[in-house]
Length: 158
Figure 1 (cartoon, rainbow, N blue to C red):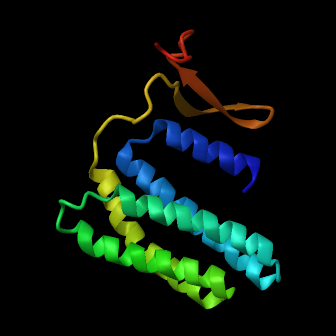
Figure 2 (cartoon, one colour; figure 1 turned 180 degrees about the vertical axis):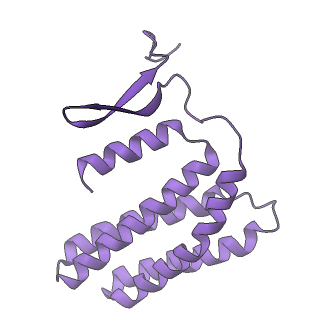
Figure 3 (cartoon, helix red, strand yellow; figure 1 turned 45 degrees about the vertical axis):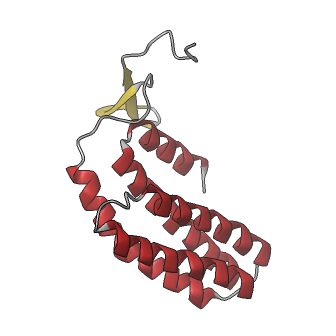
């Protein structure tokens, strides 16, 4: 992942509520799976193992984020557990086809996470962060971002 992508994800995470954070985790899982697929095709087994472990952690976090009291969450959990198992098996066997199956499952559940995030009107999880707005003002390097509500007290509160 490039430093620009990390910056973009960091910005999105700082402004996200719980549902939007789940969408971001789905996207991170898909990015890690894509990197793992590229690594295994290039014969870079160490890189494949690294990226598959990351994607395994992301999918595990998605499983734990589900509200199991909701009846719709149980089938979703089953799909995600299958994807999780396929990722682990792909790492053990160094088999690209299993991680491709996991990717297909995650892509299939992504629209559900997207729909829930659109309906969720809860405030952002992180408090005491700057609100960032991107506007149509251009500088030498491109689009400028403006931070509003910058506080001098951004540290830990005791």
